[in-house]
Length: 381
Image (tube, rainbow, N blue to C red; front, side, top):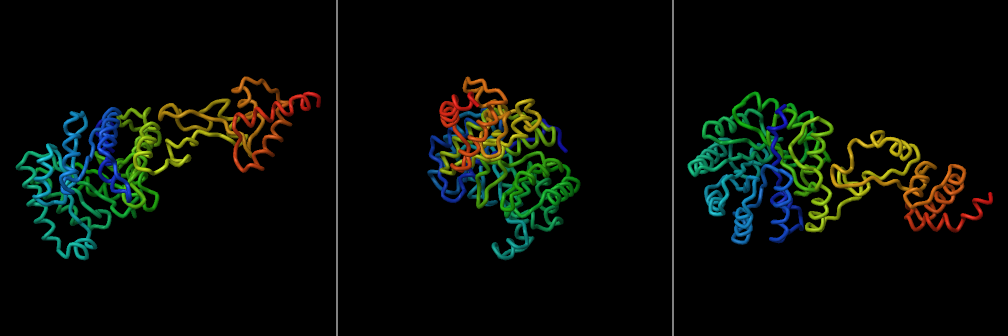
């Protein structure tokens, strides 16, 4: 696996994220997202598709004019006119995409391997003559013949291409296969860096992205909240925290703004953030069951893999059907009420009954009402 300082996040919220069906970011929103990504240390931002026309090109130029530290890269088909449009926008880096699986070469392009190789030579040669940093994007690489991918990577190497993007375009891979294929390609053409681009159709985008990194990929594509075509892409916040806490790999990303960024993008995309969204959901650090709440109160490490403050969240103790006395005592303590174990037991019965009746956990106001309405009776008992 690459060392941590070699792993570069290439976030594509502004390109693949905006390709989510029905999502459109305004100019103001694009600028805000780009600035947020830059501020937390994202190394590269895929910022749009110049071939879409004048409005998209103007938007990309606005991002170039921000003077961000992150490298801006545009997405293009491997066609000279599209690369020219990117150059006109002022970017210094391009992704040039080709369909590389037999399925797409035959049934979408109506071409053959030789035609695809020739297309790559022409497009890549043009881009390098114009001193561009070039990522060669292998659309549907996960279904492509590995030998053919090696041929394309050899062409990339020979013409000075900077990396090869291994795309699981349909989101059909598993992490074990991703690891094996990226390992094979790394060993076959070690001079060419690999980037992994994963989709979430089977719910494995984050796992596949991390597997690709562990196999030696230097670049990894993400989107904020996992936005993207169909079921989306690997989520920035999940990939970064997964690498850090599951793999012990630091990416250099400042994670403290993750919650803030996720909420902004959720609003801008009109895609509400699930309360249980991994890493940034409002309830991923909410503890209800008696055993878990008691354990967290004693030591958060008992039931939390990382400090919620790392991603801009806070812990909460929830009172509901499964709560225990420890959690109830802690919630009342937070309300300024000291409740002993003897009083907590009947209060808990009342709280559980109320939660069951209302089919949800209880608010501070409801807990106060239960206490005040029954204080005299409970103390007398």
